[in-house]
Length: 370
Image 1 (cartoon, helix red, strand yellow):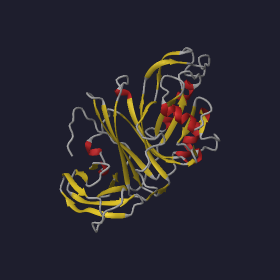
Image 2 (cartoon, rainbow, N blue to C red):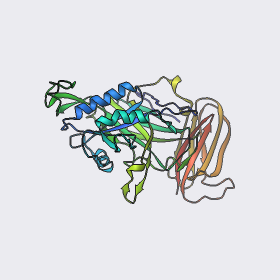
Image 3 (cartoon, helix red, strand yellow):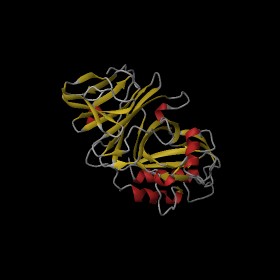
Image 4 (tube, rainbow, N blue to C red):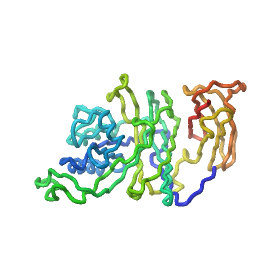
């Protein structure tokens, strides 16, 4: 697979080990520039980040100000935010806070109660950014090291740091606060972690990528492309991604059963040396066209000569065809699937999974047969 590169920086976050998954905590902080107690919320959030270096995915969900947009408005209502600042910690209930979205005094305790729990998957991000076209191409990986069931989804967000604005400040007269005597409002206040875009098709993440029942050793990925608006400072942008569950009672989201399984974040424009990229990114997979009616061309690129097995399954994971099971040399290869089973019988229209096994890694892409 060939790519035209201008300025491309490749990054990877998350540990793609099949033995364990380090849990990172996703904190969705609901805030606004009109909120007088929100500077104190930022202080607490930054303290949690300092205490847990590299383990916090911080998201500033703005409401009622210039950074409020469809996604943050939706999540504010769906998660039943009752005041500001409030934050959800992995969208799980913390008994001390007695809520899924809680006031700032409970955030640190909720993180401490959650962060050492075992996670069933790792989350990784590989991104390229073209500084000329301002196009970001992002692939999010979910690598499962344990079993998981449910409506599992991949969510990908873009956020921006250090946006200067005026900020209401109720701590201006509080001598114990770092915001004492900073003004009310604070001029040139730096907004952090401001969520600017949701790249997932649904506000609760992309469905259909991860099967409803997953076992250890399987990896799934979702790719996105987004043009960074000229009004953003791309050097301050970051990518945040997580695997989450979704559940609903009728048309109403069931906030008691939508936990975030694990997450990761990385700055757009930060690179990781090639030798640090794990084996899962050494094999890349794509299909075209998608959807297809007659033939699906499966493009596989491997970094080194290795045994490769390509298995097509239905959405429930049942094998329908083995496309390849041999050692292939390093480089780009293309395989053709005619939408049939192993006996060359035409398969029904629907969604299928192309699973590419190489070493200990499994890359899976979804393909739709018309």
